[in-house]
Image 1 (tube, rainbow, N blue to C red):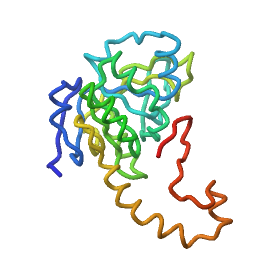
Image 2 (image 1 turned 180 degrees about the vertical axis):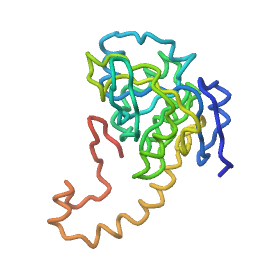
Image 3 (image 1 turned 60 degrees about the vertical axis):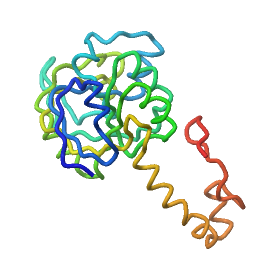
Length: 227
């Protein structure tokens, strides 16, 4: 793992391609938030953001800030944490291509096939948040709210927030531009112990997990099958 890396947004392609899994990253500049409704609003409904994302805030965070509107158009953020990113796998490629995204901040990670097929293709990285319970720490990296878009259409939590950030982090590079995945390495190590652990569980417990005999059967996450 490298020393801490501090980058300024908008990120360049070389910024992203110089990162490797395990790097610790801090950000200065602007980022924007996006969850399911932002993806649906832009990609399915054809809504066009009123900003040039690629040249201003081309880092997207899967999450919503704990923010309030103190007065019309005046917002305050106390904390922010990412949500699980695997839920958005179907949107990421199109959004990345359309808006020039160089990094996505989320929780945990995404499937390695997405890193190989999408992130590597577009020269982008996935940055995962560090553990739980430090939303206030991330919130201290938010120096102000530049704008909130589509509040009326999507509601305040699901709206697109454009945040000014300074020393925003730490984040760990989970997926880099080569298609490598830090999480996948850990999963591979854990999987070696699965069959041994499952063998000790009684059948009625396995049935609650949706399995009976085959501990290596495919599981269905959302509407995508993952081995």
